[in-house]
Length: 267
Image 1 (tube, one colour):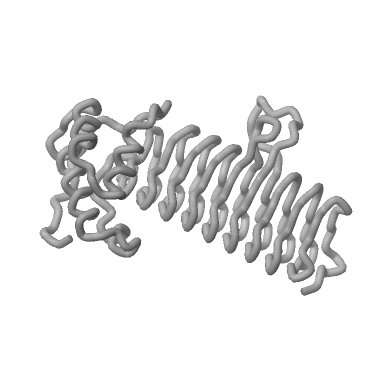
Image 2 (cartoon, helix red, strand yellow; image 1 turned 90 degrees about the vertical axis):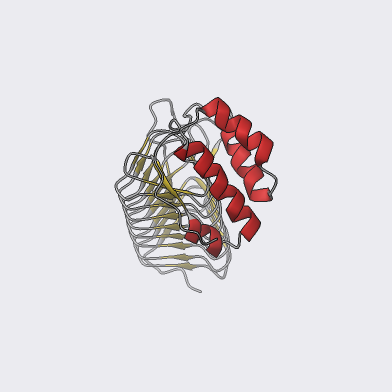
């Protein structure tokens, strides 16, 4: 596939022969573009950025620019975008702050229009940022999580796997795996549809439903919640929920006792 004659490709860049670089696209610095990647017209990729195979960077997206962090003074940091990820129009992904650190976007992620991934974020695989979603620095997002449109996530927050963050949400504390939040980051339901689509077993889904009922409907505190999980989680998914709660986070989850929607009787 061709490199368009109007594209600007730095001599330090490494571009696979099967990649396509569109009109007025810019590759500046030691960028690495893998097989079958497509850079649309007027897309920009900068610095020590690697696009793995099959990535798509759409028009006006900027990947690998310097972090919006006053502690950054030009250190050589990195940005990695995993295989088959898609970065849509106007989205931005900034590289890490400290020397040698990285911002990482996993495989098959979809960053919709005007979404932002701040410095040193780590996104798992199959993550979706809906248009306008904003991640502050050092945010961690688990596999298959969805951050809805125009939601804003505070720096250092963790979003668990298969979490669904509500539209226009203001997330200042950790969001557990397998849940749905409201605009304030409160847990309001289990993500039952997401868990089913992800292939969690009936036993896993039942154990997680029981855990959310114990923690959020009964209003027990964090220590009691952690003790409950330690004593009851036996499935793989349940143990991942326990590991999330047990992690010594700087942005701990909101207090339990937030009311969930009433569950249905289905698995």
